[in-house]
Image 1 (cartoon, rainbow, N blue to C red):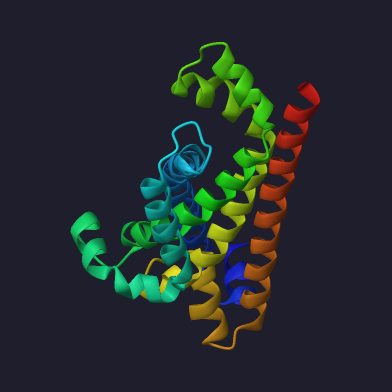
Image 2: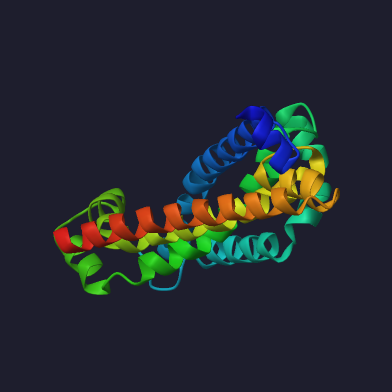
Length: 225
């Protein structure tokens, strides 16, 4: 079986498995860290904007500009630009672990904007009612804003996950590996059409599974509410 796979695709099953593991590793950790940062930034944008619970124009404008700047830089340029920081954080600029730094920098502001939009969809009357009941800022966020925005937030994270999966392919520029890098290095550069086709199918399946799970969870929460 292994010989048949290697003959058909031009790479060993072990290399295919390693590429899948590298992609899942980058996706999981970058998404986990990026989600924590992105949700925090998104909430701060909502709270500090005009007429927000913690209105602060300076903080809002600063965050707004920084997020816009971060989102303006193409990922491949970001990879190179923050290499000194990557070296300081990860101890290296090559490999899967090093790729996590630019991936987090890429996904965090992206998710922050999506989270901001999701929370702004919540009826302002809910916040007013929470404040009227004497809820603290933390309670407004944890007990009212986030639960009300949860279906939309799940779709936001689904979109972010799919977007992050796409840029993991470019992380191969620093030797991060993954399914995308496998397609480029062993498929495109070696004119290996069967491998290219196989990796494209795998990535499509990844996206379909992620989107289906996100849609189902969001729909389940909406119906429960």
